[in-house]
Length: 165
Image (tube, rainbow, N blue to C red):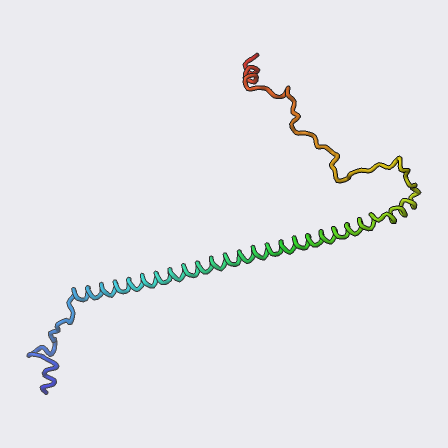
């Protein structure tokens, strides 16, 4: 019984309405609620910061990936342009070789005489032969310095013409 007495301390008629002492005061309860709210607010802020960092990381990864993709597209385009230019160069070299070959064939004296004979041409006399140097430029470009002097009007004459009625 003594164990029960220590556990429940009732004096007299307190069995019906026991006197209870609250474990916490209102101030302590308010303080605990405030601390819990502060802790929840702090955790929410930390969670929001973590989410913001994650979104920023995802955005940065997207930008980096997009820039890499753009550069690879540019490189691919440049590579295609290079291949096209090399193909054109090879075609030009091939046509140049074909032209040199045809010039070499037509430059032969024997073939020239055969073609001339087919066109009823005769051999020229030694007096009527004219030799021409094809390496020398014979065409002269017109000079750019030829300007009409009547069109040139000095600044003073221009002002005189403006004020002269």
